[in-house]
Length: 359
Ligand code: UD1
Image (cartoon, rainbow, N blue to C red; front, top):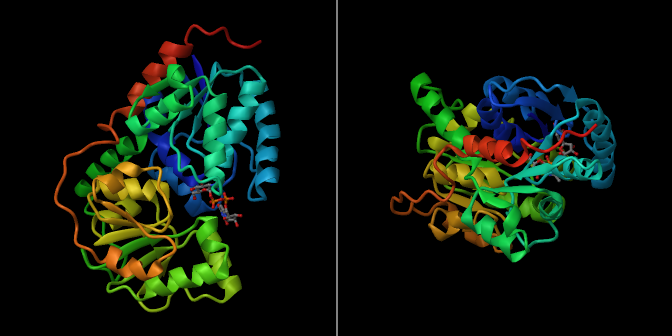
């Protein structure tokens, strides 16, 4: 069977790693990179560090407005699907690359499987919310990481197409953590284990309004420990254009880290402050307290279990939240057992192996 994966943005490369590995010897795997992320630190390093095979196709679409970017991908993917003739297209997460690939495939009557299905923020200001809802309703097989995701799919009438497989980010995190403990990876220079926070901020709702961005940066700069700020290109560009200093006070400005170095930095930190979805979960899996600068989260389990606190408009609460002590230990595993990728491939083979290939 020929399975075609479409990825384009940083978190999708992380999810692709365990899938590509689990696919070896079981199905033919074609990898398409849309080119949504293109900087070396946003793309290439993930393929290198996580041993992901080089993409078979790269559309090189680059950055752009949502419609323009998604439309360019849609057009490019149609041509790729015509040439590659996949039996199923596998799409990941909730980016513009996800939606473009799902739409291109359904319009060509190619079955679509959605990995990380069923997540909802119920916040329609988020581009990811439209992307994931539309992708779930277009797809033929919905592979959900959590029971909460399964419940959302059932509420939307999609239960029959849904399957709980666990979270592939758990798979990759566990593997990298093992490799790190063997390699004794050093921390970013100047930081001591347990003596700093790790921070990422990249969502438009936090970066695009200069007053909000300044308020967030000021609150971070006043924290009681160094804050390793891993700056997404969007954050750097906007801070520069608004004259906001990303190295003020406690802030230690850094380029984004490659995945193993990120896991190492988080594992050794006193806490995480973020608006990223993946990092909230990674902090939980590494049992590091997280503070999320958003009004809501899709990863509700992290909040329910006490490892994640949401702070949005009331930034005066940020220091108290970030500097809080870690909660008591838990062995809860809402994100699976580290074998989600194998379950995903099993499900793809079970569901689509007998489907007639398109001509
Ligand atoms: C995208 C995803 C988001 C995901 C995030 C991970 C959408 C709608 N959003 O957001 O869900 O959490 O990726 O990072 O798909 N840029 C570069 N170099 C790059 C990539 C981006 O300089 O390699 C800059 C460009 O100025 C670009 C901006 O970052 O316009 C935003 O990139 P884009 O891919 O549109 O969205 P993200 O914010 O990265």
